[in-house]
Every structure is written in structure tokens, then in C-alpha cells.
Length: 408
Image (tube, rainbow, N blue to C red; front, side):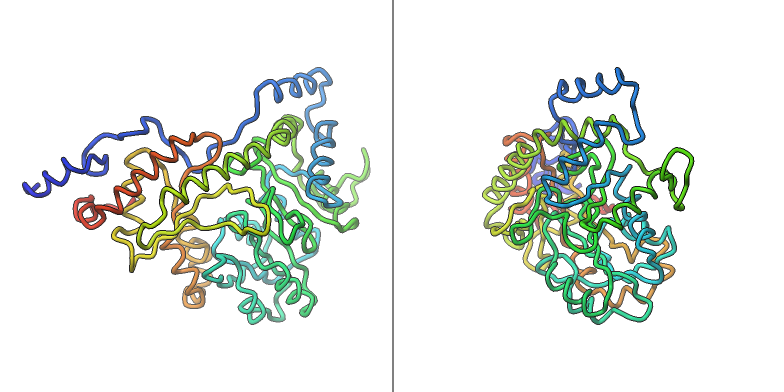
């Protein structure tokens, strides 16, 4: 190392340049679980054990479904083992086949759920400003093979629901929503969960509200709800009568207990998220080429995603270099949803032409970086993260020259 480089390292005490993590001896994870008070969970678990009723739609699950449906103002909440199974069962319950128009800028589980049951994801590009499906491009992608449209509420922000509803109605297609990250958010004053034919929400530990592992299908369609309920319990209508092809996708009583305990304090979780988001915004204001993805002011949001968008033409440091700096400091920032579903298998091999039709998606996956948030962080933690980000921007060119060349 040159004398100049050694001098730079001594002035910039960053772990990525050979120092030690300055603020965080233990990793800060994106999506660290929000957890309720243990007593609120343990009391319910004790009741389940005393009843010896651990699964098969017990009283805790019934209460959880009812309370979620009431909160989201939707007629039916069908709790499932996870959101992936919920998406698969929903598509089967609707009798879908052929292709489904959906974004490539989403968690790959969305695409996998459809591909697993024989439906081909037809990847559609997004709007740069919303990060969600571009309705005009959706309209152009509908063909005779299209059986449904699937919107994704990216970052918990609602996609352009009204425009998608009009397109779906015009083409007489069911409109579904992957609402995995959107519990607690609203669209035009109405809770996410009651739009389209159905929505699927996730209660994975990385979400604002979790049930250890789980999800739910949400719908106002009575017939569809009944079919989904049959399908998640092997198609049993009663003890000896099977009337539907089904699988086991039930949520357990233990998971429902966690969900109920978390529901009691989810508004506190959201309040913490909002404080963190506002603190990130204030602390990172003015950095060239960096913006914190905002939440719409006219609706409620869960603020569960603190996402940076970095303009490489204006920023003194690249997104990947910034991630390298942060991860060395035990801040495990993530490149969501890198590199895009269309660049992952099996889609990369099956649909090589998709790459050319997704310019906004291709650009966005190179710009966004998700930071930790949630109740596992303190306000001081957020300040510490922001301090490292600011240091990286203030010395971006110097740091970029000194960083190891290996990708993060």
C-alpha cells in the first residue's frame, strides 16, 4: 500500500479499509423481527397447550383471522402457512393457466409461486417514480394467453390500483395483488387487503407483523374464499368428505398466538418505523445523488422499508461500494430485488428476451439499497448508520479507490 493510501486509511477509520467496526459489534440485519412482549405470547401458547389444540383451525386462528379481517375491512381473511403457498393456492382456486403479467422487480418467490404451478410469469416493466407496475405497459402486454394480472405493493406502498383495475376490467381478467409487505398501509383511505379479486399478505418474520411464519389470502369474494379454505386443508369439507384437490397450507395455533400478540402492538411497531424513517430522511438530506424512497403523504403506511436510491451519475460513491462499506461495519444493507427475477433461474434461461423489455427494472436494481429499520434498532443506531453513510459520501472517490475489488 502506498504512503498516500496508508494516510487515507488512517483518516478514514472504516472497517472496509482495514479498521474495526466502529459502532456495531453485532450485525444489524434488514428485516430483524418485531416481537411483542413475551408474556402476551406465552399466555396464549399456554392456553393452546392446555386445550391440546395445536392446529386444524383452532380458536386462536379463528380469532386472528377475524381480527385481521376487521382491521383491513375485508370480508374474508384465510390464514395460511406462508404467503408463497397463499399465492399458489389463490391461482389454483381461480383456475388460472397460461401467463400472468407481473413485475420482475419483486421478491423471486412471487414468480416462483406461479411457475411452480405451471403459470408462466410475463414480466412487465415498472415506473421509475413508483417502483411498481407501469399500467400502460401492462395493457400492452396482455395477450390471448394472459389469465391474470398480479400487482405488487413494493416497499408497502400501493401500486396504481385504480389504473390496473380499469385494465383488468377492459380485458376481463382477474386482478390480484401481492401485498406481502403492505400490512397497515392504505390506498385512498382504504386498507390494503381488499382490492382486486384477492390480495395475499405475508406474516414472515421480516414483515412489520409476523406470525413466526405465515400469510393470509384476503378477499371479498365468498365463493373464492370457500374454495381457498378447502384447498388449504386437503380439500376436506368435513371429517370424511373430500370435495377439492388440496394441500396442507394451514397456519398453526402457535403462529396465530404470535400474530395476536403482535396485532396488539403493531401500531407501536409502525410508529417506531416512522420515527426511524424520518430520522434517516433528516440525517441523509443533501447528499448528492442519494434519496430516501418516500411514502405517500395522503395515505397511511407501515414505513417498514428504509430504501436508498443512488444516482450513480451524481453520487461520489457507487451503490455497491456503499454496501461494501456498510456491511464491513456490521450494517447488513441489502440490494433488493437484485438482480431482478428475469435474471434469475429458471427465468433467465426460459425468457432471455425479457432483459431487453425491462429498462426501468434493469436500472432500478442497480440503484436501490435497503437499510435496517424496525424495533430492533434504536434512534442512536439510525444516527450511527447515517454517520457512516455520510462519511462514505464525503470521501466517496477516495474510498472507492481503496476498497477491495471483490463485489459485496
